[in-house]
Image (cartoon, rainbow, N blue to C red; front, side):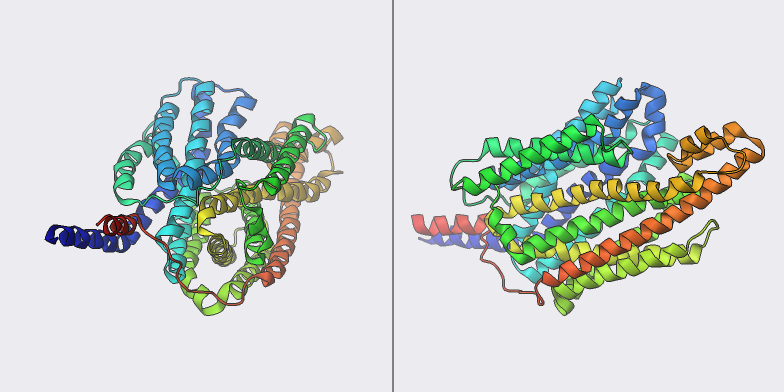
Length: 533
């Protein structure tokens, strides 16, 4: 009997230890997220070196850059729901292993085709890691107060990763070859695998009914088509192009079929009843709108800093750092703000603050105004991260625990779709406002004006070819037209952000903070031991 008592006491200590180690679990999950976030942007600065070494064609280069986010966004729902079925930790650890192997393949790639395949595998690994981190976080932090703080740290790490990627890539390229931007993942994954296996708890959904393989594949293929079409629109492809319209139409049809299939099934892959909850559906919509504004503005801001103000890529990255630091601060303060103000006021205020920052940035012109830019970027980063934090926390808390993987996948998919749509929509607005400013420039032929109307970079190339007073006039007109287009795009973005503020009024007024009854693995072991005795 004393042996049984000793064993039960040991199991109780294990259960208490599992609870005490939840912050260590958070560190492991944040390292996972940091790797995925860095890998999404680290290649951008290495594109010239990759082009010089591997000599890819134009389409191959596009796929080298885009295949990672495209594959990752397409498979989020598949692997999020698979984690609910077979175990979220298991999927996460498999993602670690695949991410490490794919990083090695990418670093040693000797052709564009091999690099594209390796980047696609990285996307698969990222899709396994991303929803698993959020769903495990929800399980490990049953108390909403603590979970809000954990999500704030998680989101701050995501902001750091997105900003560190280009800076880390630039540093590595100055000292090593382009493959080094991938090799840095391998030692971290070699550490994360055993540590994750030792510390992370396993969790699953309720396990009712078979996993809908056909539905998962429909969702993956549908998202692939939609994201591909949106990315082609964002890269300037014609709306009437068959290679743009066909993926969009086929993808939308597959997603519509997926929704219809889920409504008919007794045990759906994704419980669409979650969207009937105002807090859940509103949070998803807020994530889409926030990302729609953020990514499009970051892209245009980078072009403004480099092409209008003439800053180098490194100087551009440093100018955007205040946005990242402000986002980190908002993530770390998010839990306290959520408790004090509640989801509705917090998300609404975040949207309004971001809209104010965007309108403030319309004062930017052809000359460098550091103080104005610093103020605008700080407010922009703080406001957007406040919005995203409140929306993610509300969405994750509203979803049932057994659907945590699917809910996390929906949130991450919304994030990716919002980013893609933002580039396409705001890029279209920018081009529509920019191109008319180049018609009728004195001394510039109509054909040259038409070519210059595609982008500011192309306008500079045409101006250099023309030379003389005509080239100088075209260059001057292109800068003025770009600044005008920037102002119009900022105002459109502000309108979308205010629309998000109105949408956020459907969120709960106060934060419900009761803890959820979640058993850790050690607690289940202890219960089983008592039953057997």
